[in-house]
Image (cartoon, rainbow, N blue to C red; front, side, top):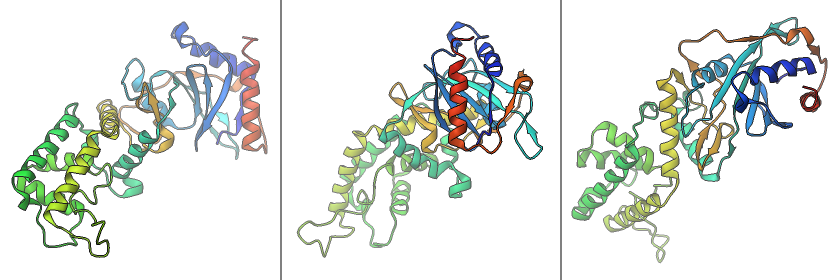
Length: 328
């Protein structure tokens, strides 16, 4: 957490710096506390966010986004670092200041999609990273729909394709076996799996329970499996989650193309940008080609806060920020 406050002189410097790129970048309005993470705090000024962080990777990633725009990534307007500010224990380290776009809170469906993707791209937490999410193409959503239609047509013509005597076969194993029989290559199979398993696919290829004889369901019966596939396809085609997954994968691919490998698509980093998924907070990124950042000297007027709780710190920073609106 941040453990230092800014004086009115420091805020004057920050606000002046934020206005350098033009009037549309001004930090206007009252500064409202927006939230915090392990390395910084964020304050909202009308339609913009002032992020104060110790995360060098986030600052470097945001620098690469200045002047560019993507429908699923927040816009960054300015990035700078401060001169070292005492952070306790006789250590000194710079803070990074980022002015970025404010995005509205995410919907329930967006957060569910992000959780699903996180399990497939966060190697540290889940031991794997599906590279497809960083090589995504703009036509992948339509390709999945075409593959699903092909599967349904193929099954309609040949229901034996779904036959499997081993009731212990998992959904993934069964899906890959069917894909092989149809003739899909490895990439097509991987792509299909990402969309197909976005909602519960346990009955899509395994059949459905018999409502009359619940104690003796017709496991792996070809007709019930086919019915399960139809129902699952209908549910997927009507779900906004397909579009959100496509949006998130396009954002991750765009970042990688700009030298930013990002995988922390956890709930706190997901917002809504015009009704679409919007990525924010690129902390813990792996960034290629780091740059020297503009330096702001905030150390002249620094005030050290000793033994202060986080809640008290948040309150004091808000007071300092708000008090400068009319002064400067």
